[in-house]
Length: 123
Image (cartoon, rainbow, N blue to C red; front, side, top):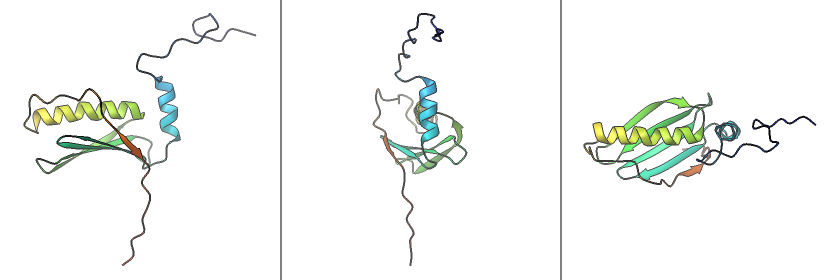
């Protein structure tokens, strides 16, 4: 049987330090339904990431202090990349527009992940 491992040893290479490989993350994202949503509450922001019908992750930020909603265009293929980009965008927003030049990304963020259910509202 031929040795198909990239290292030539028959042993697969170690996983990246960040955990899952980018390939696994893309496969995971591809299996999620459109509308799949992640929310994070980072004072004073609420960050929403959702999977668009085109397969790209789009983002919204709600600034509760300034009463602003920031809409960012879809632009990431993987959920991990979308979460990272959302935090970078949050830091940029808070420093430039949120009035807090010392605001930094938190060391860890608790993301709530779910698929919203459709509700038919009848009056």
